[in-house]
Amino acid sequence: MSSENDHCECSVIHEDVVLEVKSKFPPERPIYCVSELFKILGDETRTRIICALGFSEMCVCDIAALLKMTSSAISHQLRILRESHIIKSRRVGKVVYYSLADEHIEKLFNIAFEHIMEEL
Amino acid sequence: MSSENDHCECSVIHEDVVLEVKSKFPPERPIYCVSELFKILGDETRTRIICALGFSEMCVCDIAALLKMTSSAISHQLRILRESHIIKSRRVGKVVYYSLADEHIEKLFNIAFEHIMEEL
DNA sequence: TAAACGATTGAACGATTGCTCAAATGTTAT
DNA sequence: ATAACATTTGAGCAATCGTTCAATCGTTTA
Image 1 (cartoon, rainbow over the protein chains, first blue to last red):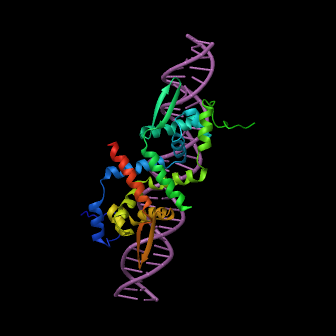
Image 2 (cartoon, rainbow over the protein chains, first blue to last red):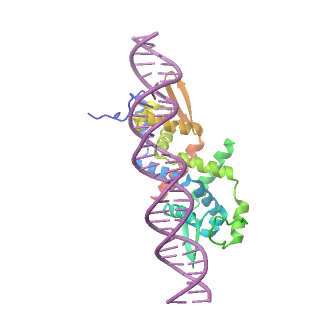
Image 3 (cartoon, each protein chain N blue to C red):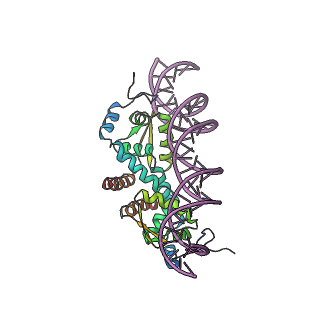
């Protein structure tokens, strides 16, 4: 016998609220995608990379020098950002230049910065 | 002998770009705070909780029932969200009601949702 | 006061993450 | 072809994370 409360050891207190929120709740996929996006942004190295690319297109070496990290570590993070379509790359000879894929991320960052600034 | 490039095995290719971006770069603290904020939001359970609270104030039990998880697991995540000032709580007898602390997070979520929707 | 119940907490665990290191690509210059 | 160099990649490892489980707290009700 299975019920909606299989995984909850307590009874539902406000069934009306639960049902109402459930009816409005977004589908699983966009929820998953949004949390994945935030997860990508939720790392200090990646945040700093995105912030840097917001000012200028940069190559791996320059980002590494700016952030005082190895280019291997930077490259690993750039791959994650590239696969998430947050940044894009173009190769010129041996050098690969990275830049922000679009302006959405900067907008998201500005809102987040505002939020932080108001807190302190 | 220490230099700016101690942690980078390659030479700086575009010194002008690095110096320019370095001069514009935000201080360490807001960068850290923003990445921490995104890290908090970057978990599917917390995303779903925030989404639910965007529709209605809810108690731990109801959130657990809605998301089909134990109230212990929910409570752990609520603590993280509360300590980050993303949600607030009020106790009425045995029941603790949670709601979003302010409208900033919803705004952030809406921007993120827009970004996701455009991608697919 | 004791029992019931919603919520919280801490330890333990398996899973995931971000870095390092070494090796391998890909491209250019000798 | 060979050397040099920017970048990428994969394995390995320590650290962090999210859940479960059991115990506890706080409040209400019998």
